[in-house]
Every structure is written in structure tokens, then in C-alpha cells.
Image (cartoon, one colour):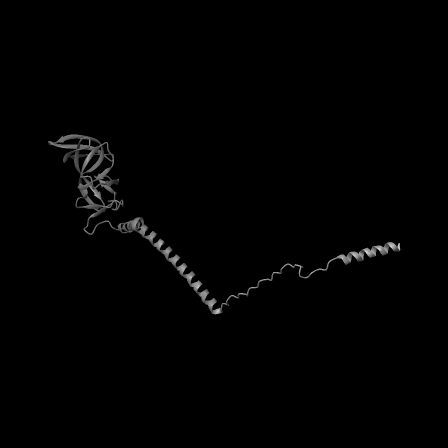
Length: 236
């Protein structure tokens, strides 16, 4: 056993002796990359004065923007108001002022009556007021009556008719024609309107109703304000 151990040791030593020495020049080493370092860049310091100036400039810009927006809003508002004033608003205000003044004006400066599109009248001996339509475009006045009958008296033409349930007889002043060419008698009837008491010529409309006061009544006596009605007080 000792011989075996001695033999193994001998072989080991022999193998070590056969290895070649390592040449430092033949030995290669991996290059080591050195890290590249850059100089640190420091931002310039902002002073308190500069910060205050920047804040002041920002505030001024914001105020300027707000002021501009406010002016634009005012311009739009003014334009809209002008449009309204130029159209309906002015007309309405003028109408209101006119009505307010007209409510106390029953005559003009020249003493002429101011009439609305309707006025209360008393005709003949009637005690019942009639709502008369004022029509300055009609050359004649008209009145609706019932049962018109022509007759002669002392060689003159007369008519009898019923108005407000009462029979009247009047001489014919003239004759006129209706739109359908029918001959109509014209008579002069006592008419009270406000403070006036006049003889007014009317066309008698058989089986008609209502009263129309035309230009023959208004001439040199009254003017019409069609925006009003019943301006004159009821006659007594």
C-alpha cells in the first residue's frame, strides 16, 4: 500500500513539472472603459426682484384681457339695445306716450273734436246711446232702420221708418245709390255727440243696423285718432 501511494505522488509531481510557465506578455486582458464625467451645469439663480416683476407683468396682462372682454360685452349689449330701440321699443314707447297724452285730449288746439274709431251718439229723440262707427273715408253717413216707406206730402217726397222701436217721418233731402245700385233716401236727423248737437244727413239703410258717421259729419268739426275709442263723453 505504501508503494501505491508513493507511485501516485511521483506521477503527480511529474505532471506538475511538465506544465509550461505562463508568459506575462502572452496573457491578454480586457480593456477597462473609464466613465466619462461631464461638468455639472447650474441654473442661474432668479432674484426676488425679478420674480416680483414677472408676477406684476402677469397680473397686468390678466387685467388687460378681462377689460377687453368686458368692453366687447358692452359693445354687443349696446348694439342689441340700439336695434330694439330703432324698431319695436321706440314704437311702443311712442305709442304709450301718445295714449297717455291722448287720454286727456278731447279737442285739438283749433277746437276740433278728437274722435276714436267708435263714439257714443244720440239720434233723434232716442234716449238710448248708439255706438257709432267713425269712418272719415266714407263721404256720407249711414243709419240702419226698419220698414222704410216712401210717400208724398204737399208734393214733396217723404219717408217713414222705425228707429229704436219708434216711428219717424222725415222729408227726403236727396237720393243716393248703394253699391248694388239701389236708390236710398237721404234725410237730415238730429245727432248729439259729446257737446255737439247737429243736423246730420244720413242714408237710410232699410233692414240695416248700426250707425256710421262719415266725412260729411267730420268736415271742419272733428278729426279721428283710430288708436282710441269713445273719446267724447256721452251726450245728455
